[in-house]
Image (cartoon, rainbow, N blue to C red; front, side, top):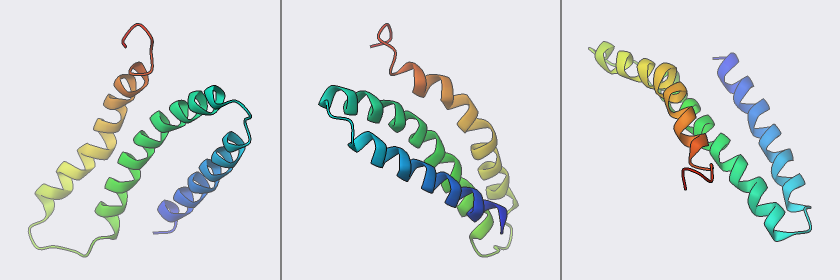
Length: 95
């Protein structure tokens, strides 16, 4: 309960600082490139934290072990599996 919100807060503050810094870039092409990079990171972070928060903060259910297994696989395997695909979408050769 302490670790998940703590890491989420650090991540949110970091992305907040990144967004403020990107907004100070004078050229629109530079801002677009920076937001493109941040969006790929943010997709992975959102998938990871949303499944973690749902898994650990939701109320206990009866017979919820099957859904717990699926959620655990989702945030432990799926996010790492999606990383290469998400980052390759920004690649010029893939586009």
